[in-house]
Image: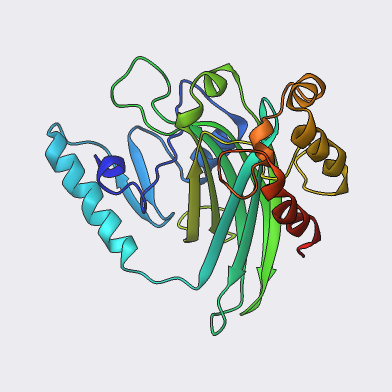
Length: 257
């Protein structure tokens, strides 16, 4: 119910003990999980155990959610996610501290989730498919840094692209809980290739010029030469067509810093 009621501000990262991952096992150990369900809100507020009444469980979680939502943060997390191959996505996170904020070190995690997985259960949401600890960063007020990671999508994710989610969070770099999650951001699929990435290598650069010209002048030839790409990556102006109106926007993509 939390995910349904607060889709833009609440995301869960559900570590399934019956479907372990290296990252998930490490996080379970970090939080000292000995039984299920155990919920950690922002890494600091624990809700361990379960009520027999669903509404009571929801009220418990809702109270914890409101508690953490009221706490301000000076950490920003901006995300971009796109395909770099038919079964691989690249996640770029711009993590910063606002001007006037406090300098701090943060451990950054990238997580790949699949909603409604494991399949066959009405209560499974945001199951962890993969995760990566990207290490500790140190930033001063007004500074930011870019971190990237690529995830390979398994057959489950490829079959349910709209249920794929990417979560990135920056957390207090401690060896065990409690460790405050300073901020989190998330995006959900389906994910496509980047606008202007006509050769589908994950970048928009001069290597896309000839494929763009081919898409513009010979769509069938483009489809034959780049079968894994979507020709609509060349629809830069968003009018639904790849045409001469996309030339100037494409040039701006290549020349923008």
